[in-house]
Length: 379
Image (cartoon, rainbow, N blue to C red; front, side):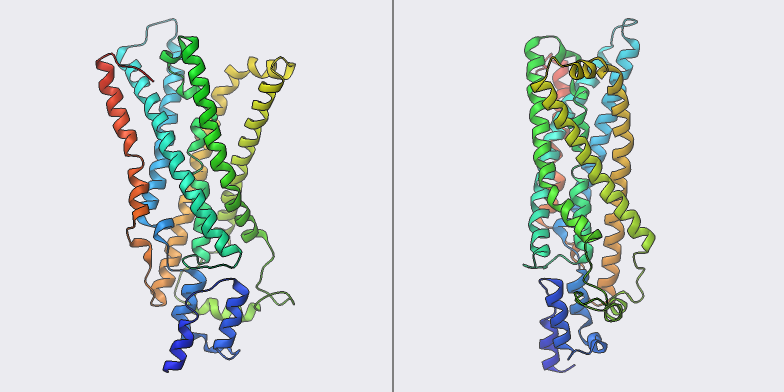
């Protein structure tokens, strides 16, 4: 490869919008895409990316796992504790160890929610910035096609564990907090604040959701039509060059990613809109028949909603983890096949923060467990 060609190829190592990049590739190859192999590393890196450690690095993945596993664990343990208390109510008094465990779980879950909110808020802001730069053709640095899809999954994945507390507030109503009107009022204020923080993260997630819908179902720039940036044959030439000897994403896998990704986002939106509607009814029409009907059935419907969340949220979370792992592997194979270095294995500041953000939860649980022995049970 001559020096002139090397300089031309270096200009293809990054891109802005897709159409301009295709035009740059054509200009570099003299409108003969059979020569794209000369710039294989640069083109494949620009189109598919070589990882982004602040989105899909090892530390970030561990942070996402901690958020979802801890959220499910707290919700399941508290739900089981509440159901057990109802079964034994009137038959035997709650043992000291059971009450202590319930108290620790309640306080730990509250602390967990604060940490999970911080992680989700940070991820939503970062996702908006990165996706907006890509979607509006500002810069696609660090945002190849696979990284964009991973960002869509991450946005949903950090939102899911918030639903346990935001939509199941009864989990945090320990017996100690139900004894006085003051404590009941304080718990109500906390529930409102928690849902408000969730709503903020949910609203921020609307742009990644919009970007996902456009990416999956919007008009394609690849095809033989007059408004497409590149023909199917020319795109196949580039795609084959980059994915040769790589296990590609099958059509069945892509459909699964779309189904669970879009389905999970729609589930969150439906839950949020229903909650807002119910809150509006309670606030503006407190004495209406509809509100009275909802209150009468709250006791019987609440456990069923809890079970629904305990089943559906892990399914959506697992599907998003699978999406991230599958796309990371696909991206890594392309990087290895084209001689690029995949950066997902690098440790960065954001990855360490994503893990340590949940350290206060362990400290809180330990403190509450120890404080019980000394009679300190303040919320």
